[in-house]
Length: 226
Image (cartoon, rainbow, N blue to C red; front, side, top):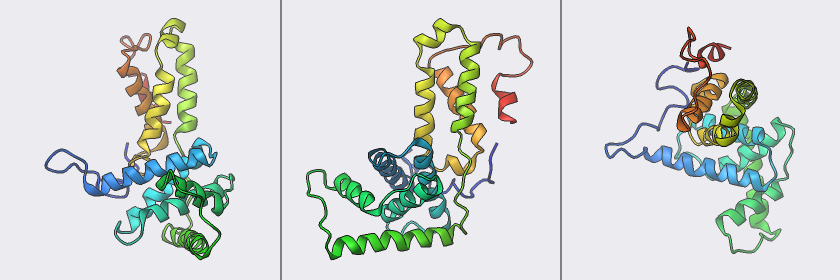
């Protein structure tokens, strides 16, 4: 199942502490990726570019210590870079204004003064740093296309009433989005994550796949091998 071995990229900093709470680094990454998602939505980014931005962010901090760079600056550069990778180009000015409004909800937009241009230069320079650290490997395979295919197949398989009365599809997409708060996108293959979130959504609402009891293998096993 794992795309990387135990304790490698995507798994660091996520082990709970003695009190059962996530480790401090995991809490920081959660907050910063939430910023990426909210800023991405306000910038009009689609789900795939946002997922790419989160993956770039997580992969960068697999290589670099969290204390070495401002994680929010890396996040802004990840948004900027993801827009290029996924051909949904963003202006640095828009990223700066959205970020400023995120951190200062009641504040005024930044003036085009020296502070603005310093921040813009920092985003561009940080983008180059991210590219070097990741060795220019910033294209990723995401679970979204697999999940869409599985949902369509399952919708045609299930009873129409069962499908309409339970928000399995909405829940699966929400679980997939939330998975990018951590490093699952680096630890597991895209099709495995897609199957996992769909399986969890079905379990959450007690929806049973027809003829699963009589089948030789669980419904998800053949798909997870794709």
